[in-house]
Length: 337
Image (cartoon, rainbow, N blue to C red; front, side):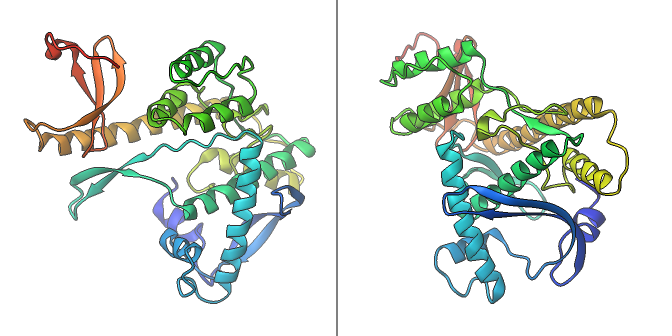
């Protein structure tokens, strides 16, 4: 993230304040297909700064949640989001329903609880429009043979796909699909999985079976989104690859030379992203440990989330965090799973 003076000030949209931007304009038909894509420098004056809660209230029919013209624009955005999403899932994009951990803190910053955070439709509206813009800009770069950075998500390794299929067969999900490079096959597996009592555990297993996404100057499929060309464009104040894409566009418009050293930059961005994600996980786990310590000695119900030679991974029903029960502590007790 850029320094706050930039990310939340000079480079951030403020209601009524002109801001230089790059606009990605497109026509979205009722089937979610994109056409007439234009990418160009612009000057934007934001009409309002809305919260996800406000947009969700608008979605739920609260006419007073968003006043005036922003409400009309918001309704069009909601309609566009729904057809884009329907089309994307129809093409094989993965629709995983996995809650994320959210740390609840007090005024001093001390953790009070770790809870499950499930997305609301307002989150999906932003996500769908950003994905449409990112795909459109990636196509724009390719059509003009511009040097840029793409987001690549390879298909799962065949052995992991086979292991996942074998796991599914134990619960009646005998999908005879051998082509793991087709995202539609994985998407079908997910939809069947959601209808079973093992949906939560199965989706976590599936998530762990997926390859890790990375950045590259060479375009390739984004498996999870079922996209043939994808770039990160919409968040230049918090992701350096987006800034590289913006620079590539500006260099083209200004007649400057293409960006150089993109292989090294893409590799650096991929490595930095992994470190940032690990740091986020470490902070969340540390907060969960602080919260769990207050319950030390209590007996509580929990769900087994993983089985390992070292023991059982479990998640208490009242705490959205995982912990390990060492195999040695189980003694002579046995169980079936």
